[in-house]
Amino acid sequence: MSRPAPASPRPRTSLKAARFTESVIREMTRLALEHGAVNLSQGFPDFPAPDALKQAAAAAIAGDINQYAITWGAPELRAAIADDWRARTGLDIDPERHVTVCCGSTEAMIATLLAIVDPGDEVVVFEPFYENYGPDAILSGATPRYVRLRPPSTPGGAWTFDPDELRAAFSPRTRVVIVNTPNNPTGKVFTRDELGLIGALAHEFDAIVVTDEIYEHIVYDGHDHVPMATIEGMADRTVTINSVSKTFSVTGWRVGWAIAPADIAPAIRKVHDFLTVGAAAPLQAAAAAALRGGSDYYRTLAAEYGRRRDRLMTMLTDAGFVCHRPQGAYYVMTDIDAFGFANDVEFVRYLVTEIGVAAVPGSSFFSDPAPGRRHVRFCFCKKDETLALAEERLRKLKRA
Image (cartoon, rainbow, N blue to C red; front, side, top):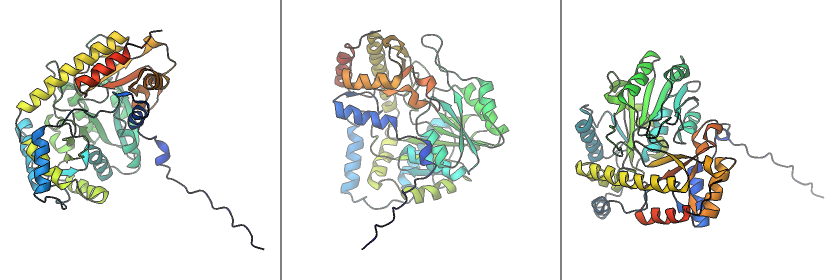
């Protein structure tokens, strides 16, 4: 008589993976698809990418640029990145020594952190934050330290942070400060003075500033995007992350890069190599063509997004939301007090299932959910027809 096999122990997952959740933003897109809702949650355009960019990609594929590029990026793309950076910032970089092309800015960020952060180090993160930054710090073995951005106290004001709170977040273990400007989700554009303060602390505590500047060309109302590397003394202490995703409306291409000091770039390249090997070769060729397209495109991009921003702000205000006017990027953070729901998660589920519009709960952008419970984020990188349908559905909202 055979005996039953002993029960196997349950497979164990890592302690790191247990410290963060799946992406709430991507979850909201799945819910939008499930319920036929207008997706104003995930920040991808639903309008066409520029024709010239698509034609360049098609030509690259037809021309058999279909095999591995050099691991850290095709030479023509790295040269285009360096030329664009030099023209806009006045900083001279060598595409052979400073530029690493990655599979989107998301991979560029985690490759950078894995390259420069050790277990036991600390990473300073401003919150509300793009949801990847906390998990990236955890996956790198570091401890995130959060500094609160506070919403404007007056209409049209800026999100701000307390300099004393920022200083208190630094310690001898601080290795990295992550700065996202223009900021997702708030739309804040960090000022030169604010960046100078961050830079001074980075010098004092021997930290590196890693900046996500993916929305650099999407700014409004006369605000200027200031690259962190242009702050005095910061060129050798800054890693700048960027991508073609948002500027050229190709979020699915996953072509991004890191611009780093020559003594840091080799470590980023090594980590990147073993994470993904390299970004898609024909799309790198098309990205190089896009970056050489001229500045008129950037001005038109900002103007078109400014128009969409104003339309969404009006829609949301008319529906009962209190909106915080973004200075850059393509998101609007709102207060939901007028609707009488217990919290943001309850409200966005009602919004997607009963009203037919998807948004992102504000709590997903905070380490402690409590400060975000009265906030919801909408995006406006959508066709006029999409915004019109959302406006029609939002009229069904009833205020408490």
